[in-house]
Length: 410
Image (cartoon, rainbow, N blue to C red; front, top):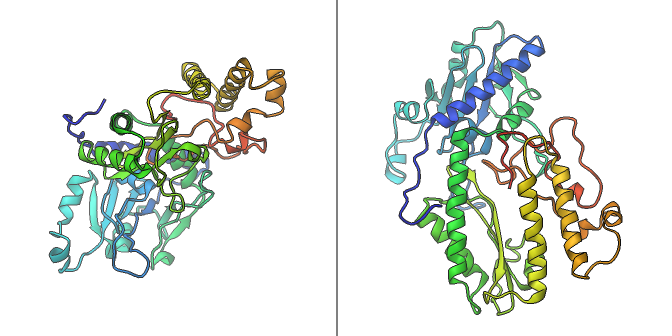
């Protein structure tokens, strides 16, 4: 587990080179099945720095996830391309004004980005057209495979790259997204090591919060302890998501902690604290929820519910393996919780009938879990052709896939 004495790990850019190779292999295979020539470019636009509404207050930048996956670039304003024919990777950096050096630091040469991000070619964004034409080996207009597809968690669409001179190219909006989303599901060893680190430092931070919690504190003080720990000792400037520090009745609100409910209740003895917080390190995230009594001692009712969830949690983990259906894992958790509640006299009746009538959704209206990686809710939960259930509880599942080696789920 990460500790104050352990330095944050170095991040090898080989990680992103491997991600590009994985995409290239899958994309070439797909194009061959379509009898499509192996020419053209994967073409992505990185994130742009944003300000707070109409002000010049810059919001802390975090790279767009698909771009981060393929290139690992931390700076805003970049474009990236992968030549499908040669396999070469190309980065396009913004041409910065001279006064950038005064306000924001030294202007780095293109050679810096080539070496740092392990790409084959680096040029400026105002040279995208001639550079791509120079590398294109096919006939006619070069074909750009753009990223456009539905995120089945947010129900929003990824934004394809925009270019003033896009009319000089052929474009395809359908092929790339499902292939790239599928690539992100299966993690390499280098990716797994970063996810492990993010979870280790998050676990240590949760333990620090447990050590320091006491009645009379504010929920936001728990958040503050966590944020300080992951940055001070883990080098994690970003969280994977908004911190949820819920106590008392707030613990029953799934995504408490937002702007309208900003972790501001005063803790009392007798409260259960439900803390859902995770650090992000070099884009790769964690997602950890802990529930425990503020006083350090459960009441009998609290212990009953806690142990019911703990039993389901442990049993699901021991059952998970490649080939197992995620839907069945969710139903297993529901059934075990219902059995525990019946054993304690809270529920009466036949468990199978309860399952058939979807009673478990009353106690678990959310899904069991989700894919985890560069995004807290990593994409790919519903591949092409998969349909979301309309049944209570099951309709909240973020994936219905069978588990496979290389998947990461929380």
